[in-house]
Amino acid sequence: MAERMATLQVDGKPVTLPVREGSLGPAVVDIRNLYATTDLFTFDPGFTSTASCESKITFIDGDEGVLLYRGYPIDQLAENGDFLETAYLLLYGELPTAGQKAEFDYRITRHTMVHEQMARFFQGFRRDAHPMAVMVASVGALSAFYHDSTNIANPVERMVASTRMIAKIPTLAAMAHKYSIGQPFVYPKNDLDYTSNFLRMCFAVPCEEYRVNPILSRALDRIFILHADHEQNASTSTVRLSGSSGANPFACIAAGIASLWGPAHGGANEAVLKMLGEIGTVERIPQFIARAKDKNDPFRLMGFGHRVYKNYDPRAKIMQRTTQEVLKELGVRDPLLEVALELERIALSDDYFIEKKLYPNIDFYSGITLKAMNFPIDMFTVLFAVARTVGWIAQWKEMIEDPNARIGRPRQLYTGEKRRDYVQIAKR
Image 1 (cartoon, helix red, strand yellow):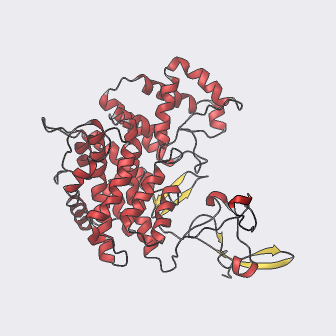
Image 2 (cartoon, rainbow, N blue to C red):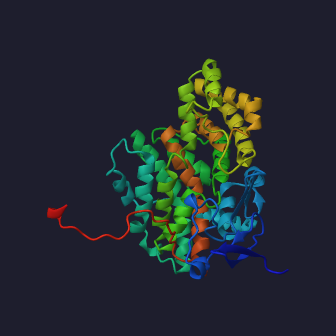
Image 3 (cartoon, rainbow, N blue to C red):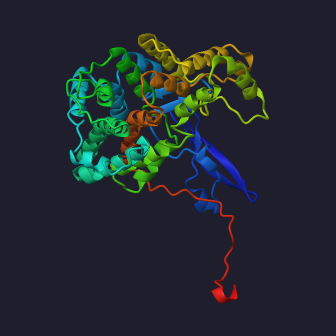
């Protein structure tokens, strides 16, 4: 097949650019030589029309509501596997055999403890510090405790660093939670699976035995799978850009966590709970629905629709069923959950929402589920970070091993002052 080319007219002269095809999704115009041949840059605020890298990890088709990890539909992975199986897939490109899965689970489980001096590190934070602030600092500090795995040129050290982060970030997240509520840290246990271990570290106390509810553990495991990766979003791009400079992997993941903290990114499920609190009761829903339909009213229903998915968020279907399982298991009676369920019913039956494809998204359901499981709202984004760490590491690893990778250096359209000469202060 002949190579596709695109032609651009610049000052009446044609410029020919190669078109590259992916295995799925839109083709791209390769503009790497555009500046050298035309003295022009492209202008794409937010990089929404720019492919910043070549990747084999995650594919999204927002129009069709498709999300694939290494080619596998997200619903199949969430229904049939567990989080560490998904982690293995994202890292190594294939689903593990039984032997590979057992070895990977063993390796992750035996790295869940953190250096004991990190407990003292936590004492430097105010008691009311936001858990995400604690996560940014503590994950970045891992490079000070595990400096024997920061040489990114060494494939063995890359593997050790990857294992350590997948294993230790749940421990740090649980420590951040415990610190914020004034309870003692709970050490991990090697006889528990990844998610059950995390729940125990979050909710157990030394004075009584804690038994992990398998339905809640499975629900959280699904949440982790659904959030494990999502292509080149803001936090993933942050990790890749940080890593392109040669920064150590712990610093790169800390940068990703900082990016995820933004309310426009990882804080969406927290915003859903705040919106439900604003609505307050089922009786007040009609007036807020009317406000949502009013173009002149700034109020927006959070947790409906998605920037990428113009169809139903494929993760939301699984999350909806998971939410129902959790609510049934716990028998939760909460006014905000009643508001949420009524909002869901309206959104799935109201012509306005159906025509505009404003379906409940994963953030709508995950916020409800995590609240029912007794996680405080300020831990929601932390849980997102625990899950997304796997995707970040896979993306970082892919970038480091790409022979064509270069340090990230976005360009700009400068609109400031032209050159001018310095004026002595007495003459200004």
